[in-house]
Amino acid sequence: MKNFIKARAYAYLHSRNLIVFLISTAIWFFGNLISVLFMDGQGARMSRVYGVWAYMEFYLCFIPVVVTTWYGQSQVSGFTENIPFQMKDRKFYDSSIVFTFVLNLLAALLSVAGAFIVTCVPNNVITYNNDAKTMGTAVFLLVMCAFCRCSFVVFVTEWTGSRIWGSVIGMLGSCGTLSSTLMYSEAILIKALGITKSRFPISTLSNYVIFNDMMPAYAEAQTDYVVKSLCGNPIDMTLKMVIYIALFMTLTYVVNKRKDVM
Amino acid sequence: MADDYLLQTKDITKKYKDVLAVDHVNINLKKGEIYGLIGRNGAGKTTLLKMLAGLANPTEGDYTIFGLSGRKTASLRDRVGVLIEHPGLFGNMSVYDNLKVKALALGVNDDDYLRELIDYVGLTSAGKRPVKKFSLGMKQRLGIALTLVSHPDLLLLDEPINGLDPQGIIEIRELIEKLAKEQKITIIISSHILEELSKIATRYGVINEGRLIAEFSHEELLDSCVQLIELRPDDVSKASTVLEGMGIKDYKAMDKRTIHIFERTDECGKIVLEMAKHNVEIQGVEIKHRSLEEYYIELTDRDQIDRRGEKK
Image (cartoon, rainbow over all chains, first blue to last red; front, top):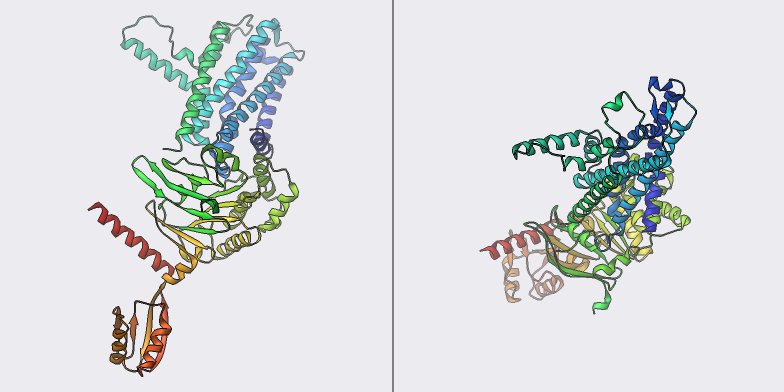
């Protein structure tokens, strides 16, 4: 396993993926820094937790592209066929998941670091410093969100066997289209069943809803970005996200194992 | 002796839904052999090689490789080199970087050897050029280099000459011959071109619709391709009498001066001697061969007829 991860890391470091990722991140970072320092946040006033949340939105939307590249290049591409006896020992395949998750963790932490730098430089935009517990909880939930989206994109890439489809469907998930479709379908089902009140149990499992529900009254926040405490129960949200990640990783594993017999 | 064999399959079978891709194939491969697996497109060559490479699981049957079977074969990763159809390459990376990825995956930490390997397959001049800019022949040579990274004892090469131009075919053939000769590597190589395989293989297996329908050595192949003896006697009717006297029935007088003999084609000398004994002057004699392709087509056609018979 260690050798396989070393090999994947070598391939990643010597490909253009890292450069593309770093340049994209740098553009976002400096854009935000310029906005905070010189554009005065275009008049917006926000709390630090909101600033970090908004900054992380970029990485969470960017995940489909980077993850499909990390995962797709080494798993879906023909390189896998150079390594014999994969059906006898699945360590090579497992290493692709471990590698993707490690990169995802590093990239998510890099984004968190970027968000902290942007929100910590002296400026007139961040007008409220959240306490350490709220900040810690928000960062934890945001990193969990990154893993949810990562596992979803890995599943779609494995299922379709295509980086492009992984990326496109992943984007639809990240921008909320899939979540909205799920919610409308659930609403139709609820109405058809004659239920008058519902908390949308299926749709609230979607990562997009969890991510947005972290901020209190998202609609109101359009005029007030000063969020003093997180909305919702963090334990409940974490459990939902653990289920989400477990579900998609199990499906990915099943699809990969079935590939031999299809 | 089972111990003599480096690879043995026992009724290895692969079924995809309703399609029987490989049907109870038994192959015994000895150390040092170059085994040519011949079959038309879709005959089951790739599926068979994928199973032997542990990239697909057999539906039925099993195989032993270096005396190991089942999950234990995973420990043989560094002893078996695999090139299935096209090499999986990182297009934006150089030859060295592609080799380094494979070397790291297999725990090989010898950069000097990787450079030697680049030289061995004739890709030194490629330098740091990304492999996506390579010709198909260069990519195949790199694919073969990838199979050699861990000093394997067995190579499984699936159609390595497919799509190559004549020059590329010669280059790959020479490289495979060099590997077998200099490094004593046992090789299974598949192709649908028997003519090409016959230049390097020492033993052959013909696969048709998933079944191994024939196995023969290089010498047996050459013998099988001897089709007829063309005899040019001064007197055809007298020569016919001599042939009848020898018990040869399968012959045909083509014209006043030519007879084609279709049986006992290995007894050409004896026939000529017998003619001389009976005062038949032989003005010419020639052993005619059918082409390897004709022989291959004959084998597959015979298999089709057998299958139709089985269905009835």
